[in-house]
Length: 491
Image 1 (cartoon, rainbow, N blue to C red):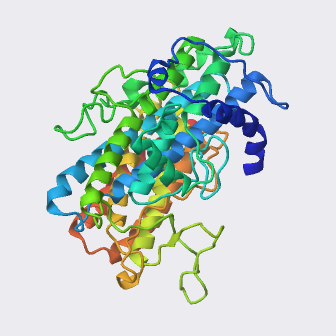
Image 2 (cartoon, one colour):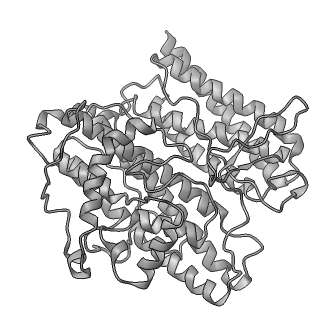
Image 3 (cartoon, rainbow, N blue to C red):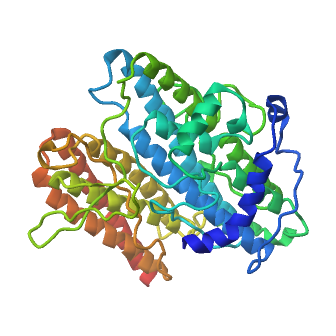
């Protein structure tokens, strides 16, 4: 897969790299705008036409948004713990809300990219790259790790506007130094958006009839998915920074809609143009603010740690004949990964992996259901799926918060805590027939129940026991609805 991506991406990325090497002054950077729709002619590789190449780049972008979302979630979940001095705990809590807010916005980007794929009649993509490989346009190799100055530097770099990393400023130089010490050839997310926008804006390459307005009923809409997440109204503490999160879910019908969607997503991430609203800073600005503050604290308190000592790239290993965890499989000399060996942590990890797969399945299924005209009696399949998706977002956060406080190894050996593994499912393809899609959801609910039943004897925390009991109850209610929908679609 890596080589298939690289041979089509490298020529375009090399052009972007050449352009980046040109000296850009701060004034020119501030004056740069994307909304003038000035397009450069994009060279379409062999084996593609323009529409197919646009779909390919959107496919890559969907994986990037998905991967960044998980890495930001993991970094946010890692924050806090007893090691944080009392005087810094409120600040670290605010950092957690900001970063988890950015992750929610990345979820909105991920969903909006599916809308673009839908409106141009291309296959949707709910997958992501698995660690550790890298390829052009991916910002850096996928890595689940605690929040540190080094990981923050990667997030600042990935979300930075064009030319910022080459400015003659202490902070840009330090970010560049830290990132290049971790990745041989890091990339900015914005480079991909520029190419996609140039293709969309070229009427010779992309005719108007390509955009399929009749896909609108099957697209995600803000009134279904936004859930009040606009201008910081939800998802952040009342006294938290405004605009965290401000979830974009952008349904589309035509070229202008697609161009505007790509631009708005780019603005929220890197803010390549002047900031429209100082109360709604970009991902780049929010990460940069945390980076500068953490840097300031570390200069005075070198041993300060904002994050728990959680696993890096956690995974659940297989077992040998005696039931002992097998050693990790190394895929490169510099590749880190931590095997989850503690039995309770492993069980929670299995539960998280199943619920993660459930979320992706629900999301994929939602794009196959229209606005409500396929109702089955009093039950709306689309509403059922969307509500179930939001339920899994809550479940992933709840399970992750448990896992970052559990030991990685039995007896706490090594002093490291576990973390959510977010193992990519073996498949994200939905069955072809509708009643089989509902049966797929049944299968995963049954798998989850088996894990919970095996997990319950390990759990000593009353809060965790209550959570698992409420999970079983909500799953039972959902199962009853799904059984009815399966029967209705099987008639």
